[in-house]
Image (cartoon, rainbow, N blue to C red; front, side, top):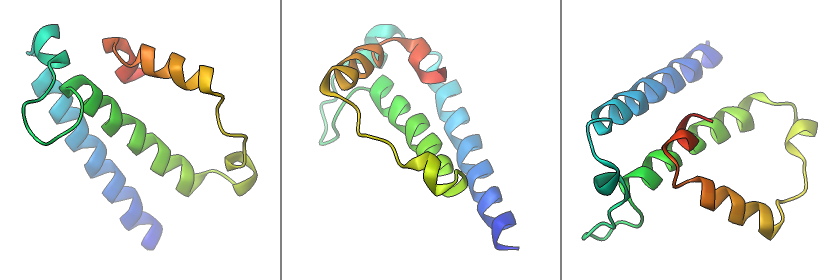
Length: 94
């Protein structure tokens, strides 16, 4: 029963994320990459990337065996590459 509830929560969150991404599809690259003038951090594109990556991370954390989750933290070079790729629209669906 609990697993079904958790699955429904993730399905709903994924549905909501997809709706947000679809709404943002009408924005230009300039709008997606503009720095916000509010208290938030990062552009709309980076926020969308965060939503997608967070969803993936939570699902992995809750569904993968513990052994699969135990890995070395990424090297600084890997983090730099990931951050560089985050500016590309296709990174949202990798």
